[in-house]
Length: 281
Image (cartoon, rainbow, N blue to C red; front, side, top):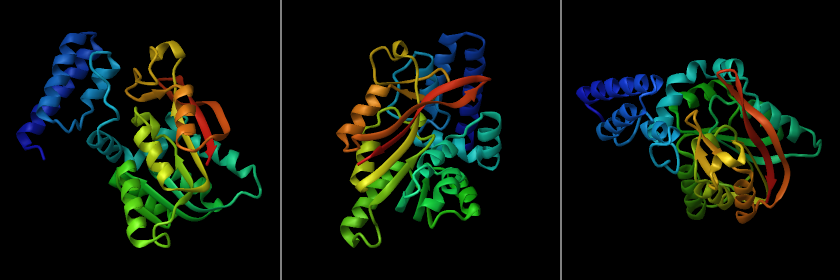
């Protein structure tokens, strides 16, 4: 927990860094972002992501938990208006169209990773006997709770939740901690770079024949520089199609029925390309 003095120093350094970056003074911005990390190693401001997006620092394997939680806590009350209105985000609705196209499709247990305010719960809940949502942002979970579309909600980081769920199932049994036959992760991958821990944790908690559906942002192949993922200029993570497909295969989700190129959202009026993926175990 930072002291009041540390918070003031952090805020001043971060705001000055943003101003320097906007003015094109990359060296000064990098120095100030480094100062932010010295003051706050938990990286609540996401300074490490800003450095990586500028090409001036190594990309962390995922966005810092403190940064993601703070970011979404701050925007929870206006999140839907910003995301679906200003940014044109419609991934949960697009995914619902795909899954609802099969009239015989029905799921017993759905897990909505990064459930946010509950958009996927609203659009997919009618296909599921039980729906569980988890999000790292407490304020987001509060918003989702008001929608009353989940049977249970948890404030937790996704991989940690899945690991604890598996441990609880091993200790207490499947009746209370079942495997999921639908796992949804819309707008989660843009905050994770190395996906191996997440995909492995999903696989460990997936039932036979389970569906894993998610969205991801992407870039032209040349922008990855031969790497499977990178931080974009918009401070989010992009993933290559080859990386996603190989990882799905490795984790047992080899039957891919949808791998559609989509516009995930807009950013300053420009479309952000990505994938909408539906894979089966």
